[in-house]
Image (cartoon, rainbow, N blue to C red; front, top):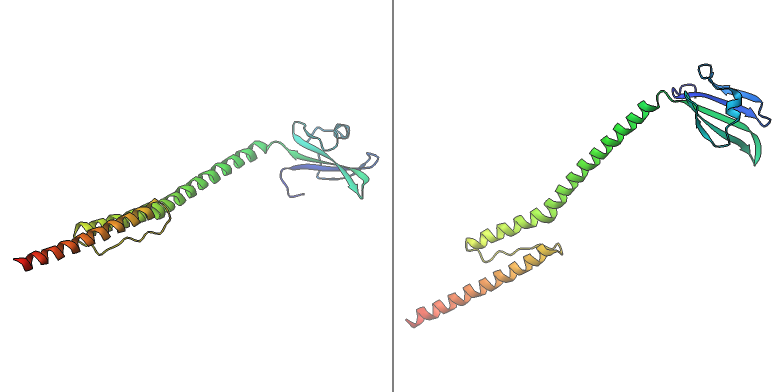
Length: 173
């Protein structure tokens, strides 16, 4: 406790409210023992220079005394500002992480299947009716992949029918 810069002092009174011991000297604070003893159990009170909490000390349900723990208030606004800055930084970090994860998910779920579809359509436009599209994501892209493959199969069958008809016409001529 002696290294805690925020700690003003700790006073401990015995069961008869007689002073027992203290950690750190409360010289610089204008608080009397009576002011402390007037606090209710577990009450926290702002007494200007310090915030004090009164706590009941017990062992096996036997009252042993009372402890008063006081913290300086002069650093409180600095601590609050530090906490606010840390909270803002954490929120910004979480926002950036969320953006990164969103882009990764969009790339995997939307862009990659869309790129596959575009590439297969380009192959089809160049006359390749042998290529199929395999997307097994269980969403609309999988449905689109199945419809595309059905269309490719239909086009392939039509091309075969045209070849057969063309060879029959060639034989007839």
